[in-house]
Image (tube, rainbow over all chains, first blue to last red):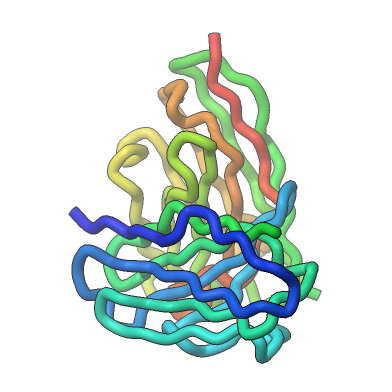
Length: 105
Length: 119
């Protein structure tokens, strides 16, 4: 059974700092990995698909990397509006989400 | 502007039924692969069901916890997606999102509709 894990569960950073979020799949998903941002009371928003392709309108400070089982979302310089929960999602097999990483101050 | 608007959520007793609807606009619905995704504090984000475009065969797929109880369907003439939920269980309690897929990822999301299964 496929399992998605994310670390850390919570990441405390300051505006302007770099944030690095990790996502791990228990078996290879190739590059079939997406990242989403969710703010309180809102639906998730697609940031990255294909492990590294930014969705339309997503700022360049968001970047994704990795393949196989290890993936990273990097926010190069955190803005106030970036404090949120971030989920990874593999769609290589039955769709499965990670538990999320909360980025807060 | 692309928009998905869900409706039909509410409070239902265990064993009951509910039908969710999702009205789509701003994109070519007939070509879209559509899914329902739910979110609860206990289970997090969980894919529920998918229906492909008719051009891709219109096939449906279901997550194991809902297979045999939920039915996903679409009306391309009305740009509407449905989720018929029968034999509801307390563990089905969640916010249900309608999503439009983009190469497997979920590009467009609705605002969500809350389903509470409780006696």
